[in-house]
Image 1 (cartoon, rainbow, N blue to C red):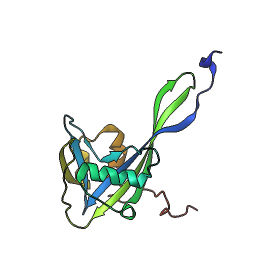
Image 2 (spheres, rainbow, N blue to C red):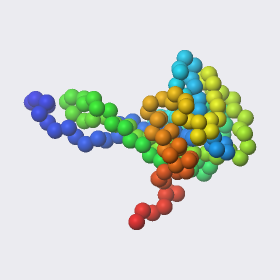
Image 3 (tube, rainbow, N blue to C red):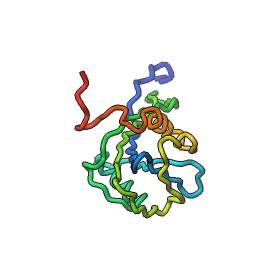
Length: 163
């Protein structure tokens, strides 16, 4: 049977990522890995059986040495990407979903960079546009700037009910 005439199935997320916006005052933490010229937020891919919050906690511990309780991670937004490559024979467009949480620090945290981190900085939200942030995370930067750091929409159990 020739699969080239089959319709493309709707996008189903094939990859999930949990991202943490570590906040201090009006700033957010950016990291730059060794050998890269791009800045990123803390992010990890959940392992089998990992909750999104557990994944965020693991990422924070590995990349900054910080330990944060799961209730300190507040939902920020959800982002979807569609990769236009279509894999035969299924003919499904691959896509990913990014769940973004934020965690506030009341005092400047004592950060111990992970082994792959070359540099880190707390960057004022108003200055985020001047940094070369990895392309997949640019929608987050645009929302942070546009909404002055306020959550765009909520997800999870803390989400207000939509009317």
